[in-house]
Length: 279
Ligand SMILES: [Zn+2]
Image 1 (cartoon, rainbow, N blue to C red):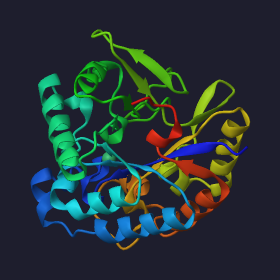
Image 2 (image 1 turned 90 degrees about the vertical axis):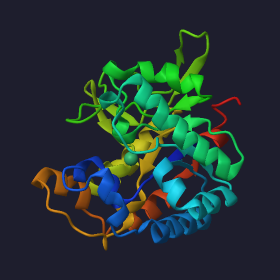
Image 3 (image 1 turned 180 degrees about the horizontal axis):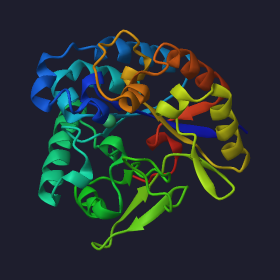
């Protein structure tokens, strides 16, 4: 039997990413060209065509401005999770600021769908060793699972020593939270990402297919993500450093093709439909 992998989409606009923060502040978001509607329509169409389900971790700011997007995703049977409200890195916030940000996003999403938000993904995987307190707060807000830990070495995020597969986090309040790390394969003791996103966009498709096949052959479910702006080569170009431009703009024109291949080669479902979370 073919393993069902987990697909997740971090729903944000092209101008809300960490790589462009130095040129576009939160105050500037209102004035940027909005491109999410068309990108989400294409994604929903693709998922339907390949009979896949996904979890959409939606930014509260987005849900507030585009309630119709939340409704469209919900109507098609996909899961809706929280990506926070204002895309602030968890480790740059105080505990109170973090709680406020997540509550705001959950309130908006639950009001729109009438369904409980069960999952959370931190902006840019920003839960690290200095922000493990976030799990206690998430659990206190009714969150059952998190998918923010990337067991790799990266300049901005990652905990290379973290477990590579889903695990339970036991909390002080006696509750537990399930963590779904983003997928990696291990070669010579080093973890290499095979979790979609920039890795799918920039690295050859055959590498990604090899990695996910390898996980599945070990009986493991892959946890894969991407962003709506990654399939949008028509988005405005901003002048930031070469490395940031490389990470944000490389291969935007071929990402949709790669996604189609991924959806054709593997079966995908959402976290809530994967059977790994008990409500
Ligand atoms: Zn994000």
